Length: 83
Image (tube, rainbow, N blue to C red; front, side):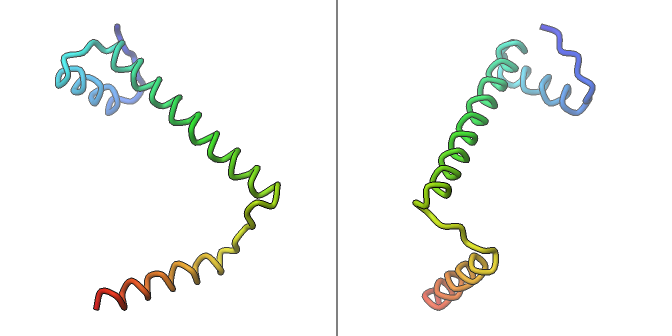
């Protein structure tokens, strides 16, 4: 399989990947695309389910300030435990 990419760095990375693994380019690219699509589907599912949870009232949104306060409190507690 011949790949004609407009990004020379990406082309070089794929060629290095082919040399390291000994696998043909078409297999490597096919695996990469399949993995990308599976990951994308998983992210889409997670986002949809989180949105559904918000819409149904199962969870409530948290403001940026509230989130920041929670994170800082956890950091303070962790710091206090480690000293």
